[in-house]
Image (cartoon, rainbow, N blue to C red; front, side, top):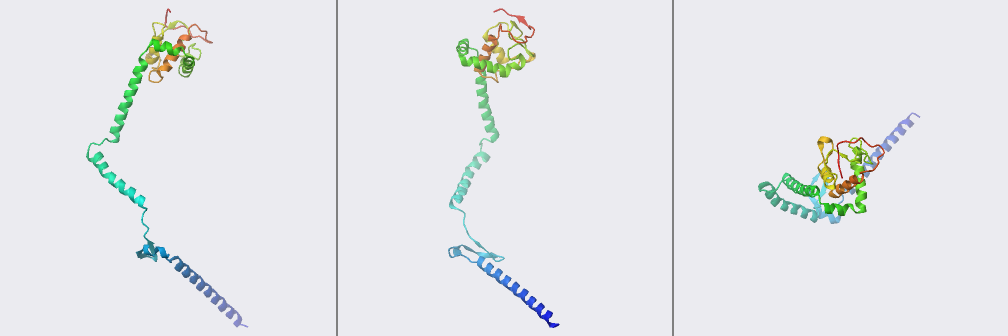
Length: 226
């Protein structure tokens, strides 16, 4: 009766050992299967091995190698021109582009500052100019003069008293809008608005003359005749 537990223990131990052996055998078989080299890859096996790991020689795609070679060839004259010679730097290119941009700005500013009464009369006679003038005034002028021109921070534009002009005609108003008067709080709109915008808003300001705003500001400046 005392031998039964011993025999049972030995049987369990033997069973455990057999299980370990089976596991090791499976792992070895798996390892052997993983190391199998396909027939079409035998020529690609390199002649070195690290920790049982063999490496296949898969070259880069030909297009990739070609692009790399072309970039290397291109880099030689590029380096010579931009580093060893007088090729323009990014700063030089920036300065050239800014100079060209300034020419365009100056030309546009000169065109905007030039008042042509015939071009003005022709343009403001169109319905599009009437609508544009109201839009430009609301978006840019109403903050100081109110939507109806009655005046708030800025003066009343519906009466005949004016601070910055001496004659109530399109040319003076146009040029005043272009150049402004910073001392009296009027910004210069020549660099902000287009020529068409300024012609349209000039016509709109003249059209405000004689209208009745909801809350008219007291007259300011000199009384002008027609």
